[in-house]
Length: 308
Image (tube, rainbow, N blue to C red):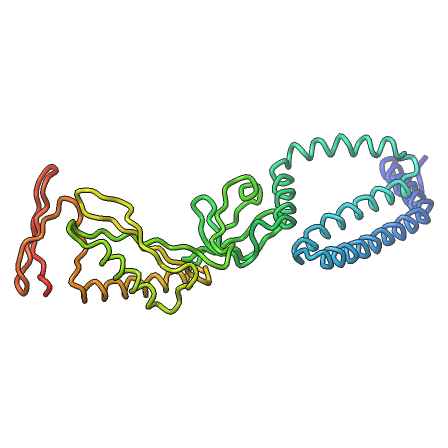
């Protein structure tokens, strides 16, 4: 039967539209109730997140832990609110069917986003256990730098040449991570090779005295020198000292001061470092110095200025 002289096709469309409108009007009370219920769940999520952050703050946890766990709690509560609202709008949708479909969907999503969930869990564990913190300088694989941010999915590291590296949390949690700034002091070793015939006790005294003259070195434990190698190239000594603070900038600056002091002290005492193995130095002070490399596939020579 046509409506108002409309064609049968348009009549069918009109009847469908009227049916949908009547269904919406009939379901309007349920929609209003569903929106109110979802609003209550939203308020509940805000209350729970605030309560969780306060509890974690009193427990001495980092604010980043509260932020990360708060996001998880908020998502879970809102997801439950959406499900409850859906059952109110569609009364024929019973809880058993809904949760059965949800369980199957969860398994499928779990397989599809396994890596993402793994990183999320690793991020939460990192925030809770705190193997490193924001501001620490770490080494992970080929990446070395300062931790700028610890997110739920990944950790942001700024390298020393000012590049941003985003490392998945699962790699940091399951892999090896070196935290250079975990403690107040950090040990540094400088290898120095001296020629055979050098008085070891004199060398130790000179090196330790030079290191103690650097003001930024930690006094306890004091600098020390140990003999680490003895070969045809000479005597290899290791000057060991401790630096505080342990940031790379301070370690580099202190090492520069130590090397400068060692160089000056050795020059004053007339002690020279041993040349690399296979390198012979010939010459007299004030005249060009002949450098001859012996052995290998060939020989090379050159001229350097001799030092007094």
